[in-house]
Amino acid sequence: MSDVRHETANKLPSSLHFERRGTVGILRLSRPHKRNALDDATIQGIEHFFASVPDDIKAVVLYGEGEHFCAGLDLSELTERDIAAGIAHSRTWHRAFERIEFGRVPVVASLHGAVVGGGLELAAACHIRVAERSAYYALPEGSRGIFLGGGGSVRLPRLIGASRVIDMMLTGRTYGADEGSALGFSQYVVEPGAGLATAIELGERIAGNAPMTNFAAMHVLPRNAEQDRAGGLLMEALMSAIAQSDPEAKRRLHDFLEKRASKTQHR
Ligand code: 1HE
Image (cartoon, rainbow, N blue to C red; front, side):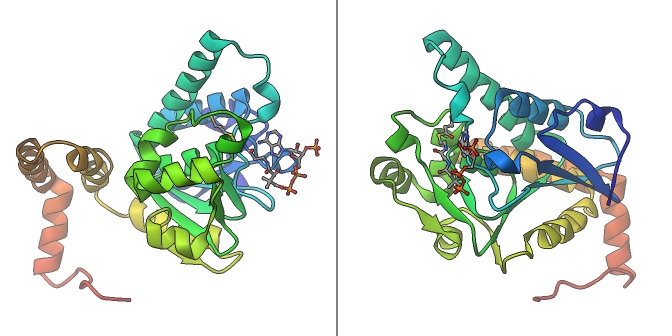
């Protein structure tokens, strides 16, 4: 993998690094001496990166350098904030993570070690989570006297249910990789050291999809899960008609009918 001299990459803070593997972009949290704790510069860098993902990148993999994915909010920046600054700070996280969830390309997070607090909120904004067996999930906010601020109170209950999130906050309960996967934190569990390669492989598969399919999965599916049945079914009908009229879909359907496409197989 080589660093790309690209405007997006050049504007990133030193805590973030961008590399590419073909059409898959790899964004690395690169502050391992602070366990990839998220300071203001990193959050701004995340917002900037996902607002300007290079056109030829079709999927992004996010991972953390060192022993841990992410230790959450940089607690050293928290002490001096008043109420107004606290609200503004939380809203910067919201903007950055919305850019991930409702951006242009699907994002696969590769998780290992601590995935805690704001690190878990960051992971929850990604579309696919691959957890190495070392990964564990926690919300230390409860014991630090603070609250979620990076969208976690909205996203995490949708992943594992509000009652479990309440338990994590109130009692400090943690979940390991296997249990976390069964609950819905991650869609994949892999052996230690295999997370990044698996995430890149998934990213390559995603990058090979028709762009309209990726758009629909990212933007329509989560909204349909939240809206009323009638609205959801109407949105589905509209989206399915748009997707199937795309020339890329027509080409793929012809490929299948003319026996040039792969069959659906269980691996
Ligand atoms: C930090 C942070 C941080 C480490 N902010 N500096 N998050 C937390 O409450 C989690 C706090 N961190 C930890 O519990 C542990 O650091 C870990 C379990 C993640 C890793 O343990 P370990 O033994 O590998 O590392 P360490 O020795 O604890 O930390 C290494 C250094 O990173 C050390 O700094 P140093 O200068 O003394 O070497 C730590 O101070 C520093 N460090 N984590 C600042 N989080 C939008 S709202 C979101 C709200 C939250 O995210 S609250 C949860 C915050």
